[in-house]
Length: 346
Image (tube, rainbow, N blue to C red; front, side, top):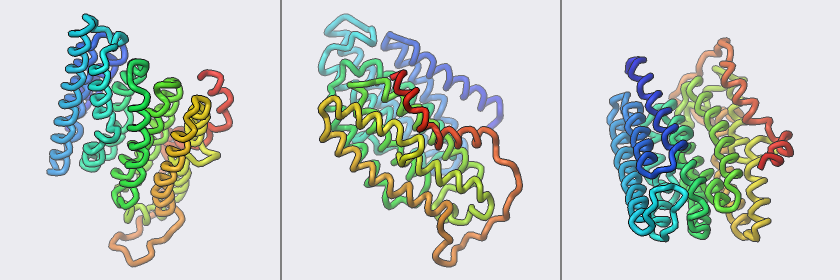
């Protein structure tokens, strides 16, 4: 793909996202989402591998269905209330359809089926865009419409996402699929709190995007997409592998890393809202995710392959680590001490 084509698609992605987050009319929001979908499709399919074409097709069909549902929801609401404004969503059927549409856009259970397959068929860079930037427009819509949506339904979907994201990631060997199930699990944490404190959802999304970006960029540098090759990369870039381990533990939500911060705030807020059972359930389900993060961290640094592998050890490289990865890794690990300052802004 030529640089000019990449530039056009990148500008289209920015344009689509900007239209969605700055509009208050349902038709312009729908148009922005469509621009986003059409801009990312060539990036998914650019390798011309059958797996990439399959991923692009699955992505297109799912997003087209979600956009149709979103437009149907807006039309239903306009039919009954005469309002096309995004904040005037009052009809219960329209709210239910919109919840389904946003869940499908985000990859929230039970509409998560497409996400791991699409990520597996994409390159690491495209997978990074799909996991972070492409989640931002539907997440914005979820935040704006959250007062109209059913909190019980959102809580149920959130706990289901945390459960499925944890269970289905346990037996994966492909790192992109593991990170896809990790994304589904994190979405559960974001959605469970959106009706009660949308700012916490936004904080969780920002920190998740920060940590996921760090992991994907690191994997892109060490050219790794499977657990078996991750085992042999410590010889190539030992310092980067060590930082990858710490970032993965942060993504798992272990203290004293950055990833613990949103989980701590969310559990605290759920307890204040008299939702201790939901807080207990989602906290226990995050232990499932912790298992596969530990497995990744173990493969990255702590273990040698237990048997003769087909992968040759790679030469140690003395090339300096990118300054971007260095800054992202530092923030992915060390933001917990400033949590009192973050708390004052929420």
